[in-house]
Length: 195
Length: 204
Image 1 (cartoon, rainbow over the protein chains, first blue to last red):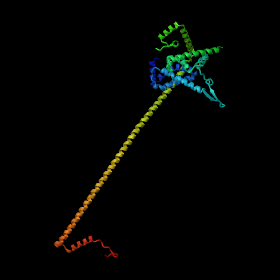
Image 2 (image 1 turned 45 degrees about the vertical axis):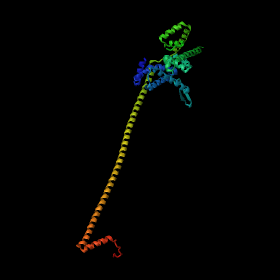
Image 3 (image 1 turned 180 degrees about the horizontal axis):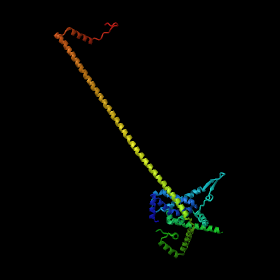
Image 4 (image 1 turned 90 degrees about the vertical axis):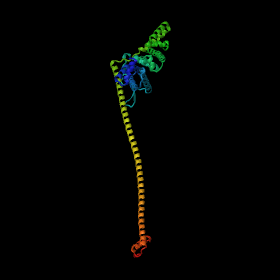
C-alpha cells in the first residue's frame, strides 16, 4: 500500500468506517505484534499492547493530520507502551499474586499458572529464542529498540529514525554498536554452551 | 543527498535500503580497497546474524484469532465513542433547550417587570389626575358654595333693603299699620339682644 492509499484508508477510518479499521489492523498488526513479542517475551502481553496501540489510534485519529508519517506514529505509540510496561514491571516485578491456605503471598508466573508465554515459538527453536531474549536483555533500551524494529517489525532504518525521532546517522551508529554487542554476547553464550 | 560513511553505506546496502546509484558506487569502492571489503564483510556478517534471529511463527488459526480479537476491541471502542458522541449531542440539545427556556423566561420576567412598572406609573399618574380633579372639583364646589352664599347674602341683603325700604316707605307714606311696625321692631330686638337667662321655674 502506498502513501496515498494509506491516507485514503485513514480518512475512511476517521469517518468511522469499521471495514477500514479492519483493513488497517490487517495491514499492521503482524509487524506490531512481532516487535511487541520480542520486546516483552510474552505473547499474551504482546497482544494486549498491540490492541492498546490500536485503541489509542482510535481515540486520537480524529485529531491526526496525515503527513505520510502514520507508520512512524503507530510504532512510536507501541514503543512507548512497551517502554512504560517495562518500567512498571521493574517497579512491580511480579505478574500476579495469590494467597495460599496459610495466608502466605505467592507470586504467580505464567508457567505456574499453566499458561505458555511463548505459544508461537516452535519447540525446536525455543532454546535459540531463549538465548536471543537473554542477549537482547543485555543491550541498552535504545539499541534493543533499533534491532527489534529493524528485524521483527521489518522497518527500514529511515523509518526507524522517524519513529524514534532522531537523525538517521544516530540510528545507524546505534545499529552498528548494537549488532556488534549482540554478536559478541551470542558468541560468548554459544562458547559457554559448547564448553 | 547526505554523505554516508563506509560503515553506514555497508549497513544500508545489506539492509536493502541503498539507492541504485549509491549501491554501484559502494560496489566500486569495496572492490577497489581491501580494507573496505573487510569492513563490508563484517557488517554483512552482523546483519546476517540479525536476520537469522527466529521470528514468531503463527499458523492461520492463531493469526485469525489475534486479528479478530484486536478488531473486536476496536469495534467496541468505536461503538463506545459513538455512544459518547450521541450522549454529548443529547446533552448539547438539552443545554440549548434549557438556555432557550431560560431566555424566554428572562424575557417574560423583564416584560412583566416593565409592564408592572408602567402600570404603577400609570396608576400614580391616574391617582394624581384624580387628586387634581378632586381638588378642582373641591375648588369649584368652594367657589360655587362661596358664590351661592354671596347670592344668598345678596338676596338677604335685598330682602333687608326691601324691608328697609318698606320700613322707610311706611314711615314716609304712613300706610303701614302699627302691628307690622311692632313686629319688625320685635324681630330687630330679638336679633340684636342676646337671649336672657331663664330661672328655675321657667320665668324670665
